[in-house]
Image (cartoon, rainbow, N blue to C red; front, side):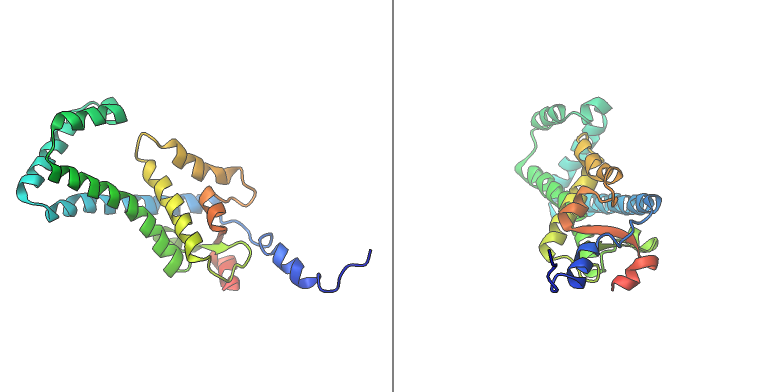
Length: 210
């Protein structure tokens, strides 16, 4: 019936650390992510513009011709993965052009992941959008400490890929990741659960957590 003296303040503070955090306003989070999303679109466009320069002129010309033919497809055909697969097969691209397309797909996936990982790891849990509105991602159990690099990477992977698929026909998984915060009491997305993090307003609580 008597409680152990060692299980008092320390355990209570550790268990309540997440409860003391207040989620950042949803509107600010949505606008901040919108800024990050627009920036990622611009970076992807730069990638598509400069990456072909690493291949020879004939490969670049074939790639440009492919893009031109793709613009002639209907919107339904461009949004249909099977139709696009048949389109690529009929194009009879050279191995070098296939290599270019593969490289662009890999970098298109890596770019959002690297963007969010760098902000999470080296800028105190802040992407450019979050920094604009004074938002910060912090650990739920120890707000003054950063998550481990592995959790930060998996968090960035989930968030980056979710953001990327929003511009593809397979946008539902990405939407589910972000919409999960509306049913979570602490307004945490799935990538927050993976990273053990929560987004707060830095001006209110971020300085106290440092």
